[in-house]
Structures are given as structure tokens and as C-alpha cells.
Length: 343
Image 1: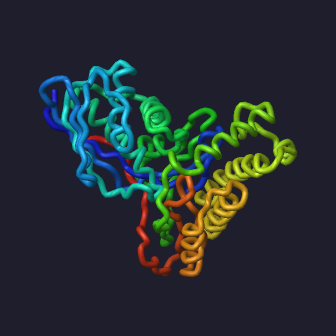
Image 2: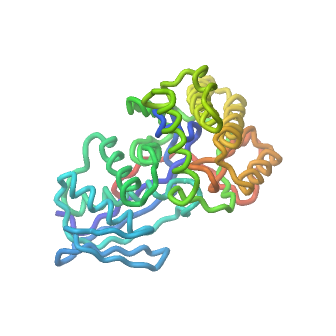
Image 3: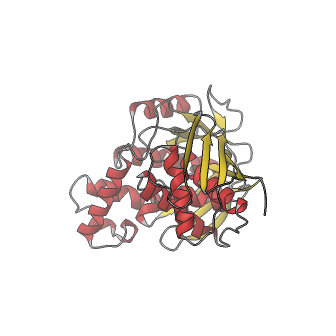
């Protein structure tokens, strides 16, 4: 049985397909090279000891009864509880959490932490993770939903666990079918810029938007908004009609993006990013002034397209820069990297 293990969970950028995961729709994310690393080593006794290095904070709890907590501690305790409930025989251990993925930037530090915790806890106990990583993604999602209080779908977890280098992954959330899509940009560049407005799913309007989508489904008598007909959506009262309109249009943009990438039409890809942002801003009302200012600055700098990424209400903006366009100050180049794994 291993004495010390290290697991890395990558953050993600969602190229297109926002707020579609919990609506049974489509998305096209990819893992990035920044993320969270969890080091685990066995410990005597019957407790889990955890330390978040960047916060200089610690936690300590019984392995058999993690109990509830808030903040980063909720992720650790929830992951231990959900793995144990799934039948994994965890062992007492010390966990050290570090990373280079800023919290609140909309790049899914939450899913990166969940994935790294799962793999580290299983490895130090001598347990193998599920062969189908979609099962692990569902477990991570339960941690976020039930222990952290964020009503997220599966996009972030699947991106962190199931991406492949050089590819985005097309996810169909009705069937959970995964398709690797080559992300060959030639001389074009994808960058992210932090808007400066901190993003928190649990504390933002994200959960409210999800409730509105559920209300729209109930009014339409469908299981997910992806099953709705456009003509029926337009008969919904405002703002439910606009929420549903965004989902249907965003699903179409995902497949249009796949076609644009396949055909090497990066100008069309840029227009799709712009269309996605306009829909998120106007129909989904998920933007804030800092995000709008960042989008404008990127467009003024020559971006072919730019849009908010993540749950919205702050966080980062993604932009596609044509060849020869200098990234503006504060921009971070993002490329599709490997999925979560042991180091």
C-alpha cells in the first residue's frame, strides 16, 4: 500500500455551452494545465487531517463521521463521506492541498479540488478509482450539491476527469456521451482574463437560474429544457422564456462550434463566442459590469470573440485572438491539457 501519493485535478475552460449541463444539453469544455494538487499520506488513528496551504488553514475530523463544515473544508469532508458511502475503504490520512488555480475566477477550482481529493484518497488507501470516470464525476457532483450547497451540473467534473490533451470534449448531458474534438487552432490563441469580480456558485445567482429552469420545465411538461420546442418556449412568461431560449440557442452553438473547428473556420468560432456571451448577458442575465468591461477590452484589443466562462456573475472571460494579436495585460493563454491523475 502506498505511503505518500500526489494527485492533480485540472481546472477547465468551457469553450462553449454554458448553463446547459443541468438542462440536459451540450457543452464543449477542456481541461487546462493549471489546477489543484492534493498530497495524501497515511496517518495513525482514525482521523483525517487536512491543510490548505494557500489559506494557511487546517481541518481535522473522524474518518467515520466527517460532519458538516463550510468553505474548502466542506469539499474535503464531503469527498470522504461520499467515497465511503460508495463502498470505498478509506484510511486515516494527512491531506495537503496546494495549487495554481485561483478561486473565484470561473475556471472550476471546485471540480479540480474534488477530482484531486478523490484520486488521492483512493490511491493512499490502495483503492482503484472507477473504470468509468463518469461515475467519479457524479460522486464529485454530489459533493458540490449536497455538501457545499452549489446546484451545479456535471460539466466541470467531467471536463476535469475526462478531457484529453489537445482536445475539447463534447458532452451530451442527456446521455452523458463523450466525444473528443480536436482543438487545433493553428496560429490562433485562446486566453482568459480575470474580470476582477469574484465568482461563487453557492453565493451567486447561479442557483436561482437553475430554479427558473426547473420552473420552465414544469410549465412546459418536459424533463429538461433541451426537450422543449422553440415555439412553446416563446409562450412562457418572462424571464422563463429567455432562460429557456438561451439553453436551446446555446445547444445549437455547441454543434456549430464543433463544425467550425472541424473546418478550421476560426472566424466563425469567434462569432459563436460573441453570440454565446450576448445570450448569457441578455437572456440568462448572468453578467456583471466587471465582466462586460473585460469583454469590451478584449474586443478592443483585437479578439475575434469573447465571452464569460463558468457560472457567470463574475469570474473570467475567454477570448479567441487571431494570429499576430498580442494578448492584453493580465491575459493567460489556455491550451487543452491532460485530465486529473496521479503524479
